[in-house]
Image 1 (cartoon, rainbow, N blue to C red):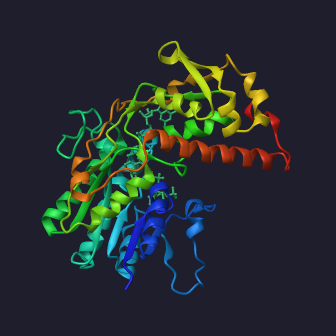
Image 2: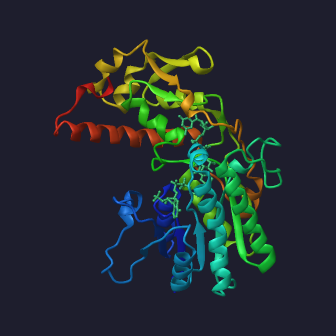
Image 3: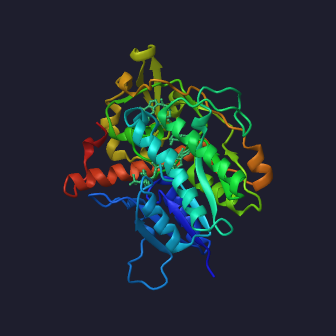
Length: 378
Ligand code: NDP
Ligand code: GDR
């Protein structure tokens, strides 16, 4: 008998990787997707199966974390062995604009899942993974951050996630639920949403004449989402539920991420100025690397840009309260789960850049009716 998993947030970055990972392990995967006026399943279209296919291993349900009746019905119908609660309004900056909705989805949404499992008498059967976050550490009280580090959330998103974290712990202790938190540090991939900093940068490197950024000095511990979904699965395979930090243990500034992303196509940038007046100027092109990565056809136009400002700062991207430094200590995950990341930051950036270069070429090709566009990198 195949195990049955339910993934909320299956249309997101992590949901897509996790669905693929579980299907490969022989699971029947159910996912909750939101109704939208356009298709919103791009990330999982390669896994999609027509409802008329027999013995499907991917089944999607309409739903929303703000709708407890809907969640309870779905969980009751499918009786999952494992629930991965990944759905959330996951953008920290946007949570300052939509704080009430964020609290509802990211905070109370967790409670709705836990309560559904309890009311449906599924506690002995269903294990629950809650997508907690390094944002809980916020104004960090200890460096590096580990499971015992006190929390100090710094955004409506993080405060909502704090509720999600503690209600998961509370249900575990009160009702002996197999409910665990993965405290995951930032993880990225070619599937990362376009407005998170890493993807914004990897898309912009070739596409935009100048990209405007927020705080260039903040530091993040970035891993690859593919590695991090392996940890989610491992957490639910443990006999005892518990909470785990998942991180690489290396932290890097946004500024250095930009340098590394440009270097992927052989371009050196130099930062000048300070605060809102800081810019990065295109200083040098290693033509061999550029041709190898991007193609000779784009080189002439790119050469003309030497000396141009390619990065600027726009305060609209600053956050009212910022998280300056995150660096995680994943010793517990390493020792108990045997979890190790396979990607480092360089290989993560390479993966993202190769993918975005491919996308750019495809888009430029399509835009111009099938003719190669020489000015794409202008
Ligand atoms: P994404 O933003 O890529 O995906 C979020 C998913 O949640 C999407 O499927 C989205 O649907 C869905 N969703 C949003 N609101 C609701 C709602 N009200 N009801 C149902 N579904 C909803 O996030 P990630 O994949 O990057 O992250 C997964 C989880 O892990 C999130 O909870 C996030 O907060 C958390 N996390 C992420 C980290 C990271 O670095 N990526 C680190 C630590 C924690 P739609 O596609 O329709 O928008
Ligand atoms: P974060 O990710 O807030 O850590 O939350 P994000 O990539 O948005 O920001 C990381 C850091 O980069 C700085 N920054 C910018 N960020 C964005 N988005 N756009 C910019 O132009 C920009 N310039 C600088 C930010 O200020 C910040 O310091 C992510 C989400 O996936 C959460 O859901 C998850 O919980 C945490 O990671 C761990």
